[in-house]
Amino acid sequence: MLKRSVFALALALAAATVAALTGCSAGSAADDGKVRVVASTNVYGDIASTIAGNAVEVTALMSDPAQDPHSFEASAQSQLAVSKADILIENGGGYDDFMNTLRTGSKNTKATVLNVVDVSGRNAGGGELNEHVWYDFPTIQKFTTALTDALSKADPAQKATFAKNAAAFSGKLAALQAREAELKAQYAGEGVAITEPVPLYLLEASGLVNKTPEKFSAAIEAGTDVSPLVLQQTLALFSGHRVRLLAYNEQTSGPETDRVRAAAAAAGIPVVPVTETLPKGKDYVSWMNANLDAVGAALAK
Image (cartoon, rainbow, N blue to C red):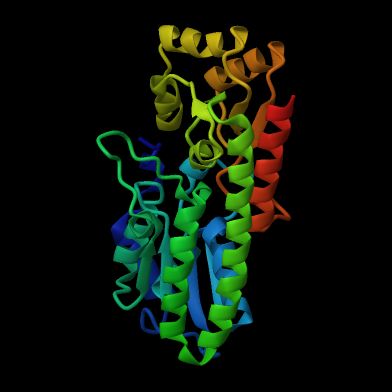
């Protein structure tokens, strides 16, 4: 489970904020005629901007690449943006529950809500759901289709533009999937380790096998202590050279992940840094290409 307690906003404060700050009805289009899109993170905000172009006003609530996303606290400005949105994009799966709180507090019942986990069709399947679906290119393709439909409904005059931009973006997604297939053809079955399941969809699509004890990554993601036995089992992956790389979430760290990273370095096993939000200066496609470059380079060592 994620460190979710920090996501909550008091509903009373949310309602008061909207009453104080907004004088227009919720879910209405911007005064300049542009559709307003609010996304929980800059990942989805970037994709929305790519498809919508200049025809839509896009706001991303989480955008600081140096911030632990699990510690994000929505502000009054976030509340106001949600209250005026025509389209709301949330990851779902428990990742950004603050969006539900903001939407409830804003009383915005007119906005179209796109929940990407729901769009993906993925479920826990008897286990723990990996909610980091933006690392899953088939999911992003489904989301692209859903977003294009929502944008076209909100602004029919721009439908052709949205469709053209979506087709170009879909072509780039297909190229990313082709790169995964190339890695899979060369490295299928190779073991890898992770600190959290953030990049797991990408790694698995590349044919790689996660060897990390499930209790280790679950504890790190939940912000709880790792038992000494599980930590030793994880460290043994590196001393025993049972994995080809460590995918390390740069946006969350602690004593256990520091020890794991040090163990990988001591064993000469490459560390591939990953993030949950867009790094500065990257768009979604260039970011994912860089992730695939890093994985490929690590495997080639």
